[in-house]
Length: 400
Image (tube, rainbow, N blue to C red; front, side):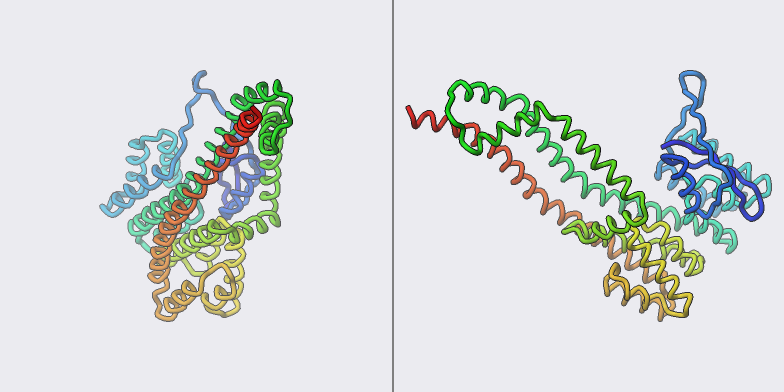
């Protein structure tokens, strides 16, 4: 990820800031997602710390959560915003984050409000964060909003870690299996091959297959590496297109076992985000728009956009959502009840809590299912290789 500086016009005023992205095009797209229309985007030159340049520290989600909780406590205690930010910026354990906080403080001293000052650093404070802060400023409940934000970020990060833990285990097993097979094919099988070649007899079918695979690993390994690189590059290029992303996201939702997990994560994220926004005073349409932009799955995004259009035409939120295949009937019914009773934000929070537990159960079930399957697969592969290598020896023994 590179750092890009940008200039943009917001409400008639020229503002500048920084954003992290892979390239200039990605940086521009990321800014547009934050409702920032840049007039110029340039890559920031990196200074090496070996020659006196400042070392850039990565700003983690944990840094943002700690800042948000401390900021909420200070605001609740009645300290002025400038003083709060000055203390937080100087005491931050992350020097880079401390500089950004002090930059926000400087912008406030120049007459800007807090939310607009934070919008200059979308790589730290995203659109959802800034919109909620703006709602807190307008409603005079900034401390409450910041506390809700900290809780939201913590729960969203916990959800992300659950999904990662579900993917790490099978990935590790497959990697170990590949490394074991590669070691056998490159270092062990050739010694058997030289022994069998001296016998001059025709090898059994399984043994010949293993020999051919071993020759492929030794002499044509570059085809495997090239194929893997080509697959990764092709996947990224396809996913970068709008149509490709939609089709791949649709396929992901239809995957066995994993598809249901992805769907539950999407529902939990959508309901948690919308519930937090509505309870903080953000209008429903604006909240749904933010949910669509932060959905993480284009199929969910399309469903939410369709819902926004239906609401603008006078429908309730539950009716258009029920026409989308993404959301389960139980979720639609609970949203309908919450909308009818005037407690939509509370109902969305209950749905999010329920689906957080569902994700926990799905991750545990996925691990329990994949563990024996992967171990059996690895055992079968290694067992096949061992048996294939001993078949000629057994044949020689029978001949003798």
